[in-house]
Image 1 (cartoon, rainbow, N blue to C red):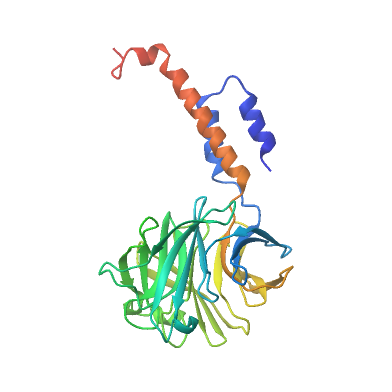
Image 2: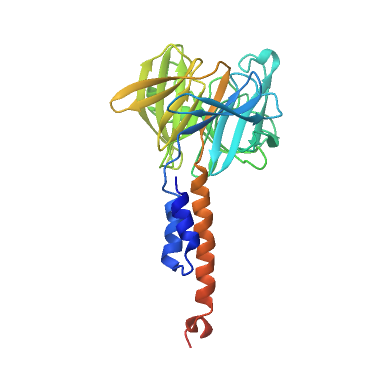
Length: 312
């Protein structure tokens, strides 16, 4: 999308500081192209899904057993993370589980690293359900001791350590925006363009979407409705807010409330959802950074720089 602009930048021999800085800034404002990551848990492969057509394309094998119903995806910048669980009978509600954080190569799908997810005490949470990212941080919806995920915690991508755990079930009125169990963080995703998190709760066929501000520890409602298909994960991008169902990809329009169903091009067992950053955005950022460096070096050779910091 931006290749001509990048070529024009690179082809200019005289690059101003302001122009180079503009390239860097523009790189952060372009829309993403409409692609979504997901995982086919039947084949343990990372895939991309066109959010308009439902076309599924294989990225590559992950090299890890991605358990169905327990796989979630999230991105921080260009880094792609996955969360999965291993429990007896594949049942995290009736058996203790080992929860694992993975970093995946977004270009090949291959696992880069893995860490067990543990609390500060060194033990695993009793339950983890939601998994998302906002403002450069990974978050999980968990319960330290029960099977209702009322707690929100930060997750260190380098170690799998959980910190800054806050029980949103203790916040007066917060339960009104969820189902019959009150606050239940079944799904999480960073809200595009903000530092907030979308939170999802599935209670039978009753679906609730809420907004969490983790900086100010507040909750507000978005939508509640009945829906027969499941919801396995959320994704938020400039091109829309989506969830992965059992049979289709869905797009949620909050105001006015409506839902688009986007059938997938192939059959599979798809879990986890995260927006694919547009590759040309990163090329633009790299071009801007390179030109900014050139501009600063040229400035450094000028007479102002030679006089020192105080201009003497």
